[in-house]
Length: 430
Image 1 (cartoon, helix red, strand yellow):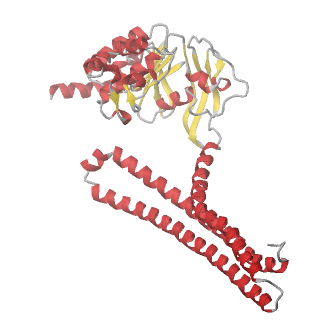
Image 2 (image 1 turned 90 degrees about the vertical axis):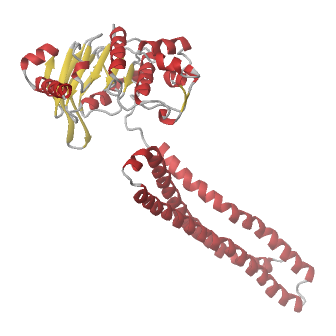
Image 3 (image 1 turned 180 degrees about the vertical axis):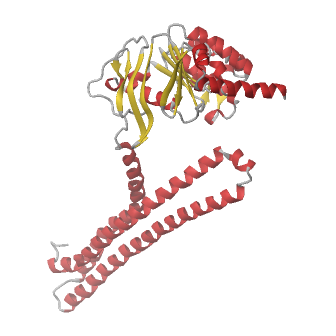
């Protein structure tokens, strides 16, 4: 175009500043719009997942209409955000077409005058119209793709914000390796808080010798589960130190630390797949024989063998096809399959019946030989044979001793024991 006629080229391209300004304005507006779209979509997906999972609770309390109203409100916000993004796109694409038409109009206006004055030929004028079409065609295509690109940019922003977020608990720069551990655990003057200036654990000091079984009891909110959270480094302590075999856990790689610890929680989480994969967690180092042996130890093999596909039986999301007790048994087998040196049981038998609990208690006795165990329990009957019982109250250790010693002292543990067994006596008499 410049080779044919410089002045006509400048006239034709005089619309570019408007196109560039419009593009930058569109980019800014539509980026904000798509951020809102992704935010509202996340809210919508979260709400749906939560209420589909808890559908039975919604139905029991007859909350269908009110929850539908809440869903409609969230869905409406999502629709408005989408309409807003479509509105910007509906303006931008015609704007590019309009600017393209202005450019052709300028060619005809300026070039036509030059043809009349015989300073420009008709062939050159038509060539300029064709070149202008060729120039704006990829811009039109880009404006169509811009919609997809901005959607991807808004989505990637949310993903990278998560990926770029610093790990809450950092690994040490030069971690100490743990090959084999004996299982000695020491808490020394440990203070911990979830929120600033609101300590959950206050000056906690105790030790567990290798192979010992230590139970931690106390009222809800006493800090029992928090001890587990900081021992496994889900959180870091505020002050003090936690040692395993004399090594501060903050000097150990988190992955390396957790390889030696297995936890059975009260709230069991199972993954989609089959029973075998949920016990082995797809670890190739755990053989099928080890999976079956772990299931036998906890008594899970009885119900597994009764299933049509046995260990290949399909497990739905969160174990929806299994009972609470069955899920608890699989969780037990999962922990044992990894052959840990330290075993943590957090209300692990709370969801199983008396017969199953008796089987598990027998299995635990065999399993705990040579292992360190921490047992958190509300039912005191499950921890009477523990080597040591730590009684917590409001974030502090109030009593320590075995079952008989604590009953003799007639302190907090004695009161808890009396409350439980009096309740049982009343239930039996009723």
